[in-house]
Length: 159
Image (cartoon, rainbow, N blue to C red; front, side, top):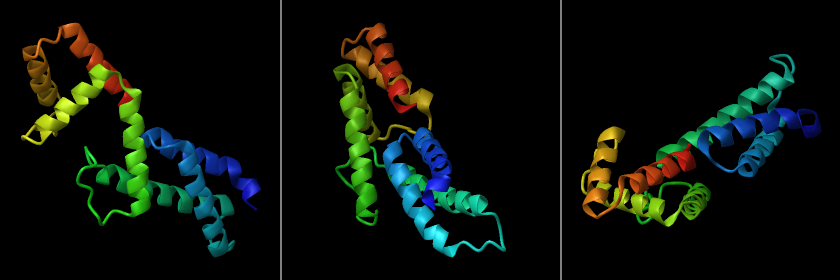
């Protein structure tokens, strides 16, 4: 019965949501679906039920979130069609929520970063990227305090 293991499912969903930034309710729904499927395959002679459920659900959530993280494009103007449509919708919603939560200044920094990344920004070197974007913003007349405020807001929003 799912009621017996609901706290385990909540914990696994919360961990997945916290580490990826995805919605808790989406992760909890996924956990419940996997639970119902795993319950049918459970063999008491091999392991305890909670261990089996934990393993099945956490593996599924890890696979789901790893796929989502690796597939998350910087912008949604060119989505790989091989990505599961449901995951694409989830990624699009998450991206829109993130952008909507930012101030206009932070949104501009994101826009500037994405524009620059298309021109060869070394995204594997965050400090170098930040320096390039900061120099561009300074050339546009931004104050140091506004630049750092925007970067801090982005860091907080994506943490």
